[in-house]
Image (cartoon, rainbow, N blue to C red; front, top):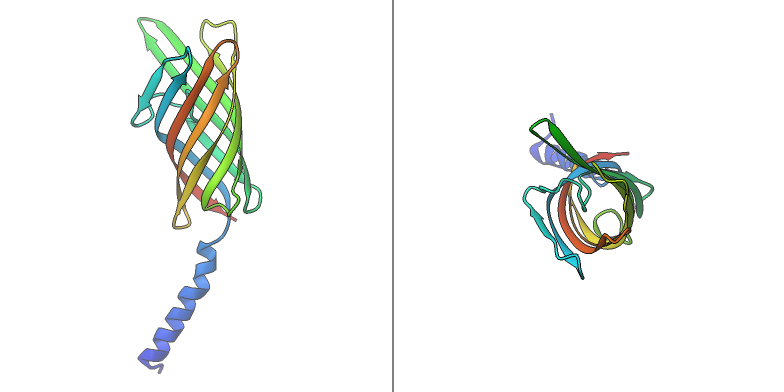
Length: 176
């Protein structure tokens, strides 16, 4: 029979051996924006606050899937949709885009990104594009959950103006 101290050493060794699995690099993160604040700049004096994000994907991503390439980068398809129906009429606002993230210190901590998207709205003949960039902070909680705080500057084509957008997102993490 093993003594209690030997059992403690074996249990400690197993916990330490299991730690690298928790520290694995993420392969995929699927998430959504929880809350957002958007402030129009210049002639665009619109401000939108959503808790949870009422402007689901309007300017910040509604849902995203970050596909990690190593420990310092990810590619992120994004999709947001607002759809409303009343008295037999419906209206939609679709924002489809992509974001490229760079994590200089690895997938936990500070990151910078560039983003581009196209917007489609009901009854509109034009489809404005948005381009922007920003920075954020990714907080990994264990090995299966991540929160992101980010701020972005966006420029919209076709006289859409410019905006600053800030968001808090949550994502489920799938490891390699």
